[in-house]
Image (cartoon, rainbow, N blue to C red; front, side, top):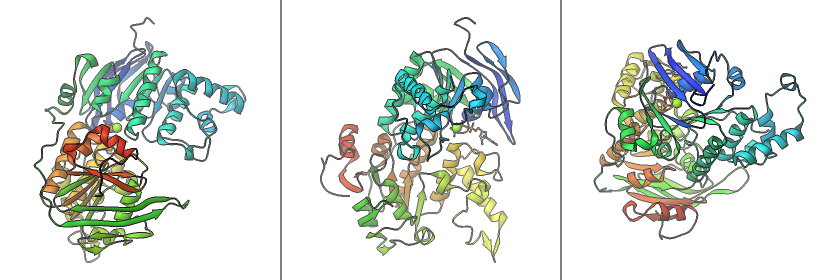
Length: 511
Ligand SMILES: Nc1ncnc2c1ncn2[C@@H]1O[C@H](COP(=O)(O)OP(=O)(O)OP(=O)(O)O)[C@@H](O)[C@H]1O
Ligand SMILES: [Mg+2]
């Protein structure tokens, strides 16, 4: 093999699922020491292609070469044997086990011809973590470490198994800005040490910052492969969605009316008795978008749970249109006029084994016209689902398809369609664009503004500062379970918000 031989070459890979060609004759070359970004719309076929390289799916047509040799990758074990590792978006770690235990898990002594020795393992992990700048505490339990740390454990796990080729499927979607910049450093280090990386991400900034090459796919086909230094975010966005994309939300100044949501002195403790909401106050009026900025873990999830009836609070009042909804049931709150785009779409957004049709009426199936004298009215449900799927451009082979087999971004679009269509007074949008492609982000943000313009109150919770600044009419900063300040988007910037999110009180007042 000479230096020009790709470490992985995909030749005309085709993969079909019922009703869809997920990969349509895709060819791609990954060279040694390269970071090759894979960019494409939600449902374009990126994860499918990488699952083929990692041996989780078999291609219907096409071939794969590793270091110039044709191979059949019929299982993840085979992929690992060939030096291919994958860091999945949803980690597969065992919570009560330590970092070290997780890393060596599955490397049975017999298979490796050596006995598992904890001390030797710790030493080997330490060596790897020093070499690649992957700082972890080998003795910590997974349940006690942050998401960013857990991801490092996943990376170490692949390196421990000897991976030279690493696949990252949307690794930054779940990370904080700080963790993202650390991961970027780690990836640079990995390629400097001779590894090769395929990176799936929707964030054009990350692609521009770290990749060497970028391949764009659309509806299962390769549109182009470009050198990163010879392209720019606008060109990439246009190639991936087939039209130009605006990164700025077009909106008129808000004309807020009466108060829709008022939260007073909201207090709640977690199971260890630590206050997670600490006398929190906020107000959202009809016709405005209040954005909540904050570092993950400062009470955002608890606030949403309290507002939607998913958890009880000890103290404080939540009023919707002047009526007390504190500690009411989720159904009561929904029926009072609250829609919720949840941050965890698998836990609270969809029933993955239900059809798309059923998922579109999850909260309304018991009402007319979906329920007729105790029986489900399938034709009414199907009609509703068809309408929503068309209107919100949800890419699914059919309304009978199970939610599980939709791409991540299309699952998210389906939830947004359902929640907006309920015509709520208050729309709670938690991380609404997480995992979405740039075209879909533009679409969703426009929908939020349109809801506002129709006189709804919108509460936006997002870790994306760009999104908060772009979409909100007012910004409230949450820190340690309190709103510590409020700013106007046109009067603030990343730096000021960043400082407030870290706990320094600059602007006064509460939301
Ligand atoms: N196991 C499966 N069964 C049926 N269809 C599937 C399956 N996995 C994926 N698909 C379909 O294949 C297409 C490509 O999906 P894939 O998950 O590869 O998209 P993606 O590019 O990773 O999108 P996203 O950015 O939203 O993650 C989608 O239409 C999806 O519904
Ligand atoms: Mg995917």
